[in-house]
Image (cartoon, rainbow, N blue to C red; front, side):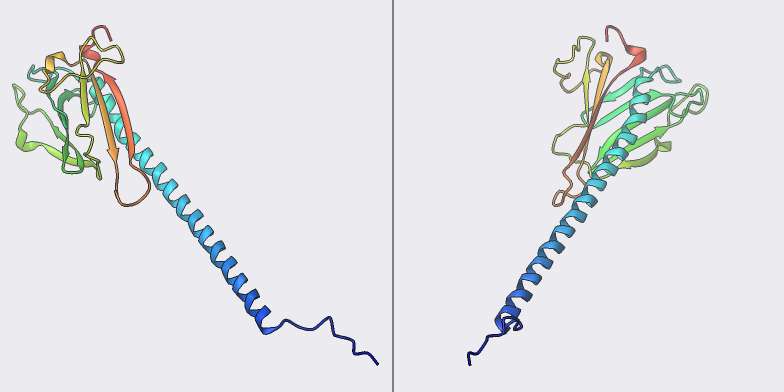
Length: 204
């Protein structure tokens, strides 16, 4: 009588090990994929948030620069026009008084200084300047935040070279790049805008 082999025998030890190994590899790959997706979503969310915050910073600055005007004591609308510092006069808080505004780079912090006029005749006391950090992690490798153009700017004209004569300035370009951690993603975020100064505008 012939012996009939059992075709329904269970897994051998080796087959079981191979199956476990394959399952483990699939689990590791799936876990890594999920981790990468979550990490990407986190970085993308951080990028969008940082970009929105940077735009939120730039919008009011642009409005203030656009409305720059003569100070309460008759000083010219622009006081200084440096690569990383711009000082001008504008009605910052819409109270009818002209404040002295200073935006400047301090290390990797972008700061704003405000001086309210006081007395008659009006004076701007540098000791009363209120300074606030409005953005941190500024990438300073570009070398400038502000660039300036005169009345001949046509969209492709080179910016004025330093030292800039404030009387020549008609348009200000503001470019800020934030890189909160150079060793990690997301990549640096750059937001720029060009602002024509309304009260000084000629042929722009």
